Amino acid sequence: MKESMDAVEQLAEWLRASRGAVAFTGAGISTESGIADFRSPGGLWSRHAPVMFDDFVNDPEERRRFWEIRCEMMPSFFSAIPNAGHLALAELERRGKLLGVITQNIDELHQRAGSRRVVEIHGTAMTVHCLACDKRWAAREIQIRLDGGEWDLRCDACGGLLKSRTVSFGQQMPADVVREAIQLASSGDLFIAMGSSLVVHPAAGLPVTAMQRGARVVIINRESTPLDYAAALVIRAGIGETMTAVMAQLG
Image 1: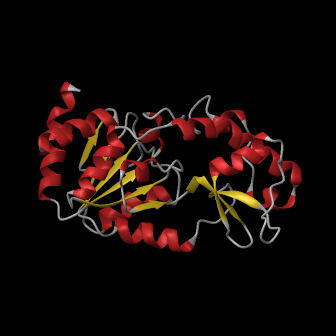
Image 2 (image 1 turned 90 degrees about the vertical axis):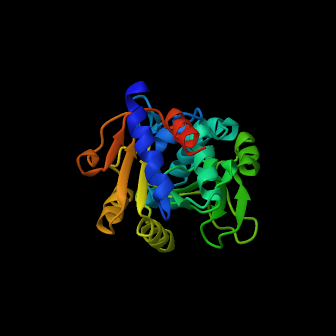
């Protein structure tokens, strides 16, 4: 971390001067809370072919496979707690330095840390809803039904199919969420991308949107990204340790 201290001081200085920063978070912030990166080698999508949205709707066996995959991943979601990175972003928002968080994550750890404005571009795994009438249940409540061997879950109000409120492969992102993400990305003068490989579109285009509106872009990620060349600052370190150091600089 010693070699990153100049970068930490620079980020703290930019935050002090900022009229409003925006954070964009990917799997790297959640892995520090014990939630595995689905796309990494050995991750969920290397062990399971993803369930396409149309197949979920039309094929009971694919629905069963969808819920079996969810049962594999949900224990870590239920047990995870926000880490120093999540808490730092919530504190920056409380101080009026952060306009909000745009996240690719589906674990609601930002909200649990205290962040108020969170745009979940891939939805949330912590809620299940009816695809027909949008009635909603807590994921823990639905987990009881899954643990009891119920796989083809139906709405008790209208009989529609139940599904996690995540954006599945082949499923269109809600237009209102996309609009809010673009609006937020366009609003700040400092855009901090954390723990994202910046390769999954359309989310990966948000830093470019911020740049085009004149924002400085900072990337905090252990691995290189396709946008490193254009960033004002790149920090190759963990998010928790970096943001802890930044907050210490801010006082």
